[in-house]
Length: 160
Image (cartoon, rainbow, N blue to C red; front, side, top):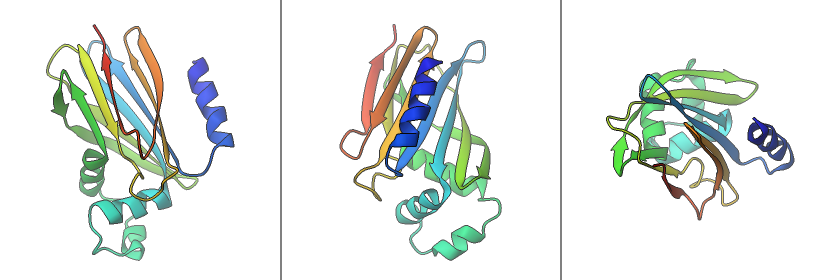
């Protein structure tokens, strides 16, 4: 809980190119619940640059709500989660835009017991050299916070 408070304070005093990701293991369901928060305008620009540069920002801004299929494609091109060195694909549960921020709730279903976890977080890294992708991981008794940057996009954790 203290880490969440500290991360919140850090966001307030940091540059504007920040994303927040939390990865939580849900006991009993063998799933990972992931929440991503990104400035909506940055999300649209990153989507355009990464997925479909033929779509103008004006067209992307006109989507109300932003299509789930397009959001899934974006998420799975920017956030890679490997369980025991095997890539698992996330599925968007819901997305909500509020106060200029998009909140993405994503579900990942690993097929095996979690022995290791590798996270590759590249949100906004093609847009901004000073991006900070703050990530919190909570799996059983394991909890850590990581700051991914344009030069540091991947981290591996041994869980058992």
